[in-house]
Length: 261
Image (cartoon, rainbow, N blue to C red; front, side, top):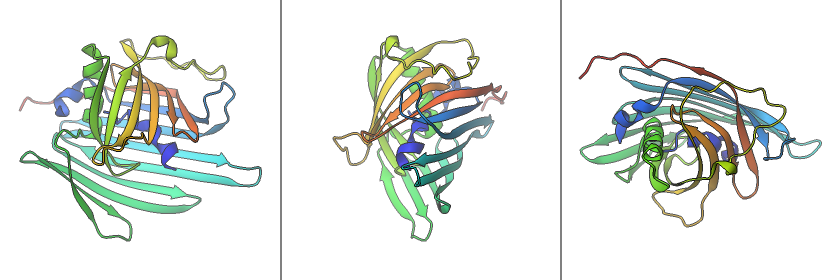
C-alpha cells in the first residue's frame, strides 16, 4: 500500500509558510497505472485538493486503487488524508483501507522554541512521541521550498519533510533537476489537460528515512513540477514495482486576500 500512495509525496515534497506563498490552491485529479509503459493497466485514481484561507492551508487527498495480482486475486487499497497546516503546526487524520479493513491514524507536528515535536496515534496503540530534526519542513511549505530552489537555479539539493501517509516521520529527499528529454511522455489514451502558463522543471527525487539516515532509498520519484505547485507525469519506483500518475483534470483556485500581520 505504501508504494502506491507515496507518489503524491512529491507534492508534499519538499522556510516556512511564507515560502509556500508561491503555491496556488488547486484541485488535481490523477489517473494511476501500474508501470510506465504506454499501455500500462489502470489501477485507480487520486485526488489532491489544496485550499487556503488566512489561517493556513487545508489539504485533502483521496487515493483509491485495485491491483490484480493474479487472474483471481485482487487487492483493493485506499488512503484518505485530511490535514491543516499553519506556519508552526501540522495536524492530520489518515484512514488507510486494505481489502475493506480500515486503519485510522491521527497526528500532530508542532514547532516551538526551536524544537519540532511529533505525536502520532495509531488506532489501538498508545501515542508515539518523538523529536524531528529542526530543518524538517511541513508538507505544503515544502512545496514552496522546492519551487524556490528550482527557480533559483539549484541543480540539486537535499530537504527534510514530514510525511503523514507512508512512514509518519521525516523523509530526507535528495532532489536533482533532470534534462527535459527525461520527462515521461503523455500516454496516447490520456485526454490533454490545460496547464496554467508558467515555468516547469523535470526532477528526480530519492526518499530515505530522515532520522535514521538510511543509505538505501525507500523509493524514488520522477515528476514534472510547475511553479504554481502542480505536479504531472509522476513515476514512483520502489525497486519492485512502478506506479505512475498523470493529470486527468485540474482546477486552479485563487489565493485569499489576507490582512497583513
